[in-house]
Amino acid sequence: MRGATPDLPWVTIKYAQTLDGRIATRSGESQWISSADSLVYAHELRASHDAILVGVGTVLRDNPRLTVRLVEGANPLRVIADSTLRTPLEITLLEMASEVIFAATTAADPARRAALEARGAQVLVLPAQADGRVDLQALLGALAARGIRSVLVEGGAEVITALLRARLAHRLVVCVAPKVLGRGVEGVGDLGIVRLDEALTFRDARFWLCGADVLFEGDLEGALPPSFPAPRTAPSVLTNER
Image (cartoon, rainbow, N blue to C red; front, side, top):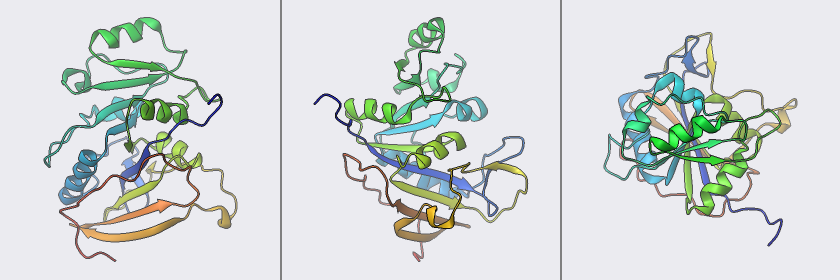
């Protein structure tokens, strides 16, 4: 139907932070805030989702593989939100056989698009938000149209914040490590909240011990309805549910 709202995959946001809410040091270092057990759970989440999404800042800082390595399971489709295609051609992502998609806008240089496609990547040109970044709802709709039923978001803070602000995320998984950094990178930025009663709240909230860390998991109240159910994850490293 013309003008109908596109399907949306189930979206899980997962990140690790310190006790004072930092996902990286002030220099950008983030590997690894969480414990080895929490890293295993992160890979279990990857294996249970159809796609994994990160912003270009995460790619530039960490040069991640975004694959499943610590547990058995298939690699998710790797998706990079990169409005102007700043991703270098020499990154690890492009050296691997697993499929990778770059989500860009019309502001991206056509030559950069051609170069990435020559390396085997796919490039989706999508609408831009007012700030010039990729419209994440349009991106999620495009992924759903390709048969992607679930997306795991691992950062960075701008992507996490944008999804929470737009109520496009359905589940939040936060690993809290027993560390304090002081000044550093916040996990979540400005959500436009000025009153306490506007705070995001969660249903079915749970806490677990995972090695030295505490894991929080909850489903966001008021999120835009997903078109697909939550993926099943059978965590092998969680103990002492609270």
